[in-house]
Length: 360
Ligand code: HEM
Image (tube, rainbow, N blue to C red):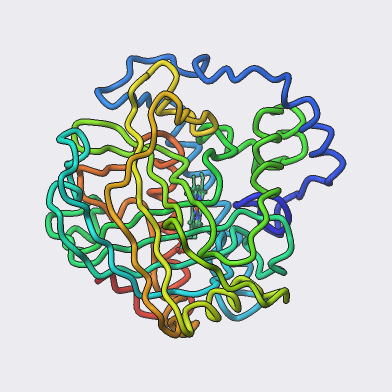
């Protein structure tokens, strides 16, 4: 996202600010017609897989592979194709709370206990741009030591449960085939998808001076055992935040500045799908309203004072929502795209860089 979105790459046609603003002005008038795409019978979790989805996933994956390969041919290093710039990878503790209601006490949240974890904070862009540029910001949490089989065929014995979030409640593309159209011609896509254009502008409008002082959302839904959920992390009440740096790397510098002498923490919360008609599984551009289903804390993420991991250690980690136990399987078309994309791109960049790709 060189300018406005989490997943616009430098190689893609970037929309002019004028075009996007024009689209956004009309966005308020655009109907949110997510239901129009749901044509088959949903499964028990509300998923509907369109017939054209496998071809769309292949197209998105091939395009991103080509972009990573081109970057490697140019720079001699293969970077993440999105969320390239890390502000830091930090050690954390992920503590599942006790006395949760039965509906929420499922999967990882069934047993109150504490886990080691790693958190990577990032900008959404595929380039390493100035932190003042409009962008989505990522918070990727890797909980370590989680027992049980995992969903990825090539990493079934991994001990990790990942939670990936961005600092906005909704994603800007509904499904795999729209993502192909967005990749092919971004300006034309946004001018004909005003609801999505409005989301891109809203994502880029958040200002952030310290990644520890922001709220993040999963954007897309997941299973919560027998339920479906979205999740979110919010700074614990009463925190104070270091923001002395205003440089192009202020997010890393303020994160590092704070953790040089103090700690930080987040409440990790889940929201269940209480009103399926208003809470689509196959359209992450539609917010599940907190008025219908509030977020409830189920865990706490403590980040003690420390020096964040060196760039190389942070770079070789791989986060994907599919590093998961079955009880938290990602749901919906955008997550089905991400299953193939993250696995393929992480493998490719490690291969090209001659780095080991090892999941704890
Ligand atoms: C079709 C839609 C999407 C595509 C094609 C896509 C693509 C990617 C790619 C290629 C990476 C780098 C992976 C790697 O090299 O290891 C990435 C990272 C990431 N994505 Fe997405 N993404 C999509 C949707 C989303 C959504 C909905 C979220 C919402 C939370 C999200 C959050 C993240 C985060 C936080 C990272 C950084 C992970 C890290 O720190 O390593 N992405 N994405």
